[in-house]
Each structure stands twice: as C-alpha cells, then as structure tokens.
Length: 255
Figure 1 (spheres, one colour):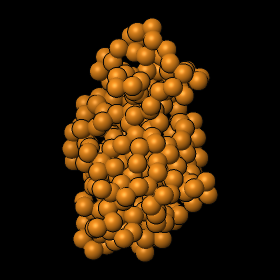
Figure 2 (cartoon, rainbow, N blue to C red; figure 1 turned 180 degrees about the horizontal axis):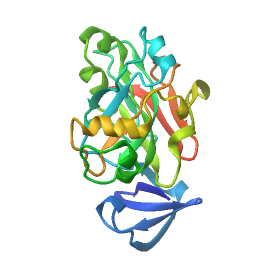
Figure 3 (cartoon, rainbow, N blue to C red; figure 1 turned 135 degrees about the vertical axis):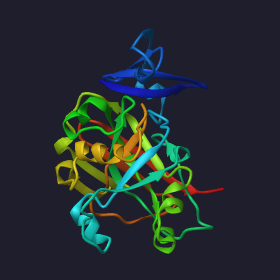
Figure 4 (cartoon, rainbow, N blue to C red; figure 1 turned 180 degrees about the vertical axis):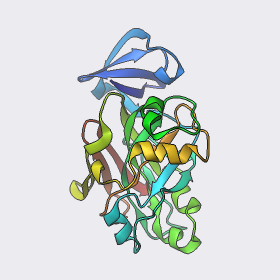
C-alpha cells in the first residue's frame, strides 16, 4: 500500500495511491483505521505533500562504508545518530532553500527513510519489524561547510527545507536490497543498494530505542551512499528508491 498526503487547492487530505489515482481516506492510517471517503483524484491533479510530519527525525551518519571513506574516515563501530528538526521537512517538488548568507556548500544525501508505526522503547532486533509502518524516500540536505566548522551537525542539518520526504509511504515492501539513486539535473550521482548498509534497519531501531522512545510517525534516516557533492541554485535533485518512487526538489535561494 502507498499512503500519501496531498492537497487539492487549499484542502489537505490523506489517501491510498492506486495506479494513477489517489483514493481519499478519512485520516492517516497512523491515526486510525483506513476509511475511504469515496473521493478519487488523478495523481496529476493533486499536489503531493510530505507524507508525514514527524515528531522527530533520527538520522544515521556514515552507514555505507564507501561514504564513510569519502568523508575521510572509517565506518563507525556503532550507529552514529543525530537528529533533524521536524521544521526541516518538505514534500516532493517543494523548494530546497539555499542559505547563501550562511553556507557556500550545500550537499544532497539520498536516503531510505523508515516511518515508525507505534510507540516503542528497548526494541529487540528480532521484533523491530513490528514497529515499522513503512518506508519513504528522503534527502538529508547538509550545509557541509558548517558541519565541518561546527564539529557537530545540528546547524548544518537543521535548516528549514533540509529534509525532503516523499512521495508517499510504502507499507508492504522488503527494504533489505533496494536500488537507491540520487540524480542532479537528470545525471546519476549516487547509485547503490540498501543491502550495502553497515547497520541494517532492525539493528538501527534496536540501537536508537535503547536511547529514546520512538513515537508513531517518527522517521529514521538510514544513511547515504557514496557520491555526495554540492548542489547549486537552479539544480533539481531527485532521490529514487526501488519499490517506493521518486522525490524531486529544486534548489532556490533562501529569501
């Protein structure tokens, strides 16, 4: 099932994507059972939004060996966790705002995102699948120069618009070996498979929930493959993940 959040004019709704249409539902399935309203819309006639606005976004750094090496280090022994604010979330085709006054290098980082489906803490690896609602595409946009300057990552990762999510949540896929690609202006820049993760999704969930409680709708970004590079104003960056879809965003100046 593919769960979308979308707008028709000024009205925001949730729906199930079925082929080239979206069937409206009364509320997001995380908020209750699926109840179809009877409304159906062609996908081309709706504006897709971020499929979820999480309470928190927990991200994993250097979870692909080649990316760790391109960043000048070896992969960490334990998952390296950091957070991004919910205010950084945008949806497909919404602009990534380049903060030119503060940063001169903003990078893309295409990632598989996990959406949590229930309150959970101290989750065992073998039971991690029980707390997952689904998966979506993500772009962990990063002001790389600020990341290096600060020594910690909050400012570099936390700008408004620095966490595109979408186009919807896929609930019935196997995430263990999916193609993940990032394209800039149609040119492939990252091309890997999720099977190359150092720490897989069950172990990430177990590790994170030793530290904090996850809530329904919280998002885990599982790390980016090798191939990061700067974005420039006017670029269109697209994250594509097999069995999920594509997440395009254009880079524009921050007002």
